[in-house]
Image (cartoon, rainbow, N blue to C red; front, side, top):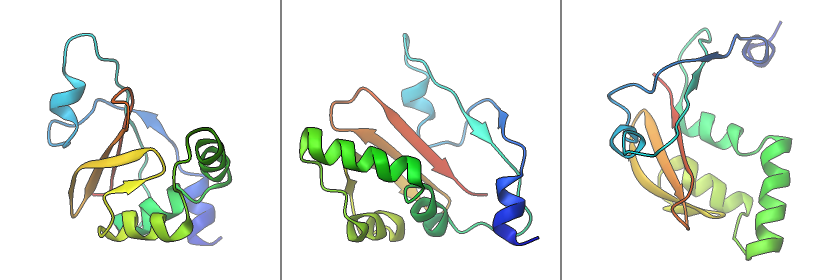
Length: 120
């Protein structure tokens, strides 16, 4: 069984958003809903690889198409590569609000939705 197969079969659990998350202060604001899911996989996880693979899944490719057609949001593979490697500050309707070596916090251009990805 390859590494991707092991990851696909990993158990995903709802967990509290960690205090160290860059998104924690925004998620703690009154009236804000947040959720957080985690999984454990064997070996080290590289954040840039995680980000690029996450947003390149069939589900997110479909979302990118809808966002491009509905809002003219740029979401080319090169934009995704720049988001993943830390040289880009925006992708589709998302803008980077914070980033470090292990996490990235994104917010949509309207300020209605946030997304946080982390690898530790």
